[in-house]
Length: 430
Image 1 (spheres, rainbow, N blue to C red):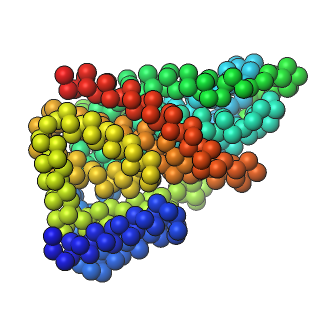
Image 2: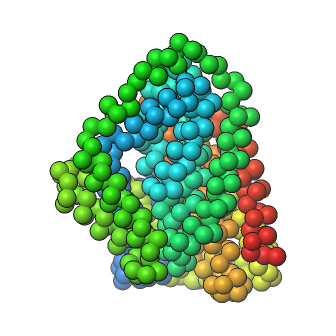
Image 3: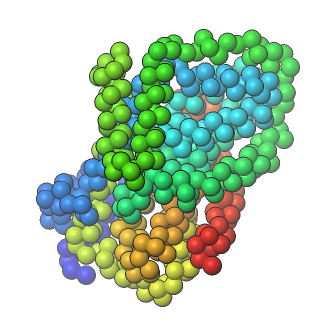
């Protein structure tokens, strides 16, 4: 490698270390790394902002922006509070039944929305319901965030790593539904069984508390019915457009931005309110990350890593797929799965070309997605949703330690990834 290549690697690893250890805010680390990449000419303005292969992926940025605006408007209706109260009543105040319903709601919502947004909306309501039932809230929070990471794996928009993978691999919303969603349904069912083993046997039913929950009126949580129907209609149209991409030929980013624009224009929600719900730090973090990875592409580092990966697997698709699944799960447990996938995507793109093209080689994308999404459950820093929930818990006076989360996360990750391996083998590699 050239001197510039080594400099680019050093900048990337330093930024990555700062992100992983949280010594500085991850946005500052990503932007700082991107700035240094530009400063040393590892990449340039043309490549960073306009290149399809080594620049900021604007499809990812605008897809997230549009969905965040839609969810921000939906939040104003109180529908998430409605769902939590409804679940508590349907469970008749029984803690484990409630956990099962909240897990299913969280996993389902994370498949339609992004998992960070889902846990932001579900977690605060969980505190209210658990307080009324006099049950510990920590098991519920841990179960919900893990369910969000599993459920988010089902669709293109469910987990940020999937958006990056779809953009780099040229995969559609329907591709994820066909290849990821069936196994995710199985994993959610298995996860419910794990929840019983990890938490359910220790819950105690309080009849008096349950009676108090049963008198709550979930309809009172809906603050604006007109806005609710408008939001659900637009969300349904957006989902339909995602599914009909092969016919309509509109990219998911275009669909999301159009949906957000229509919703803001057609409702009484002000532009300021809608934009206020956008997680700008997350979007800026993505932008900085793309520029850093672009620097590695431009200096030839990614190409050399791809060649080494092909040589290591001997060009064997089975070895590459299962190695990528396990390796992704392990590495995503150590660092946030977003920067990991942003780094690995160009490498996997080269591997796909080397081991069989878009047909048989496409299994590598699913191995990367499953490994990164499920590996994010292993530790408290494995996924952005984990960090968000731990922050909410700390602010509410029930801090969850790194190791308390991780002792459950490792079990869930080992079981779920262990089930995905034979799924990939039977469906794609036999």
